[in-house]
Amino acid sequence: MERFKIISLVDITRSNCSRSETNKIKIGQQANFNSLVQAIGLRSNLEWDTDPQLNTGSLPHPLNGKAKHWIWEFFVERDSVFLDQGDPVGLLVNDLNGVPVIDQLNNSIEINPCCFITRGENINIWVYKIS
Image 1: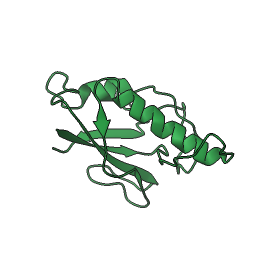
Image 2 (image 1 turned 60 degrees about the vertical axis):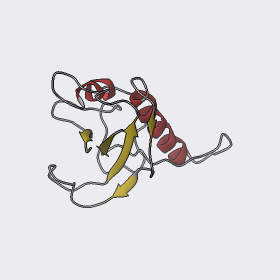
Image 3 (image 1 turned 30 degrees about the vertical axis):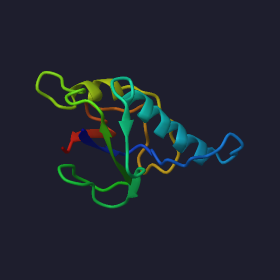
């Protein structure tokens, strides 16, 4: 199984809220997490050991700057499922770009437009193959 890491400036907290939840922050967080899982799941079934973790301060290498960010690792059942022209995450990067998200949660940046952005100047989510 291949393992991947996501670093996101978009709040992808897995709040596990129920249908009766009224807290709009928790509802939005879970919606963003669900959107991410569903987009990844277009190509492969995925599993994870831990939920996304909120970090503050410096972004992890190779990124620069400081901002709230979420780090999440997951694995998929098939090898090379996101491989595109030698890039082990190329297809996933393309799939995630433009997926709508809920803004004004616990992000430390403004998300505009309100979607995952994987290319260009306003990137707010990065994907890495780690094993």
